[in-house]
Length: 236
Image 1 (spheres, one colour):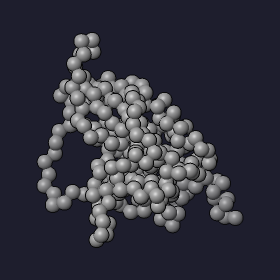
Image 2 (cartoon, one colour):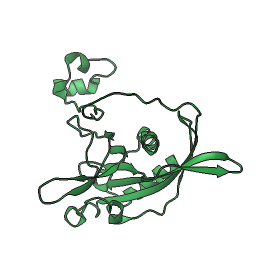
Image 3 (cartoon, one colour):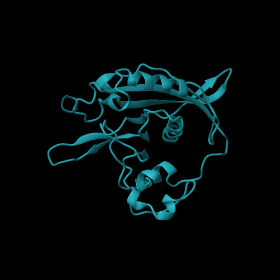
Image 4 (cartoon, helix red, strand yellow):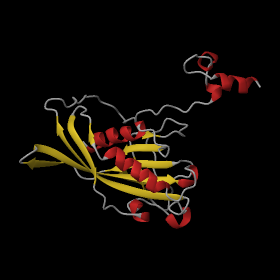
């Protein structure tokens, strides 16, 4: 259930429209990656990645810091939700997730406090009761803190901090430990689909399109096409 919860929470973050949000993913796994014949790297990979700079159809990709982005955000969650019995609230479940964030302050106005601003925005957004969404109801998220800082945030991954320097200014990183409390709508879980496939194919990310990829009809569409200012600039 952690993957479903992480997907819902990341969608909420993306919908908030924060300026720092850029490359995002749901729940990740630490996967060994044989990048060459001499060493194996461990990288965070996710089945669902929203990458605004993606130019191919692959969605299983590493999520380590990259200066091309304003930020990289993803969730970790290594334990299954725990059943809680409360005399007042009754039976519910608690899941523990960790939101990992890396930010590029150079692309966010150059402030040394860009990570602090991002954390405060995320805490304000997440520390509240969330609308029920099948199969979850009575969802409440609390940021409990207590996570690692600095390079320890990426300690389970192969991260050559001495070479990349992606944790020194103008870059920063943070993690938010969350508890997600929820109940389950009885009888509302999704049904499994039995299909035989020779190889699992990841979901397709929308391919990034360049101006040459649009038709004349798309460019001149009154609702989604070029604005009058853009047309004037092109004609000029």
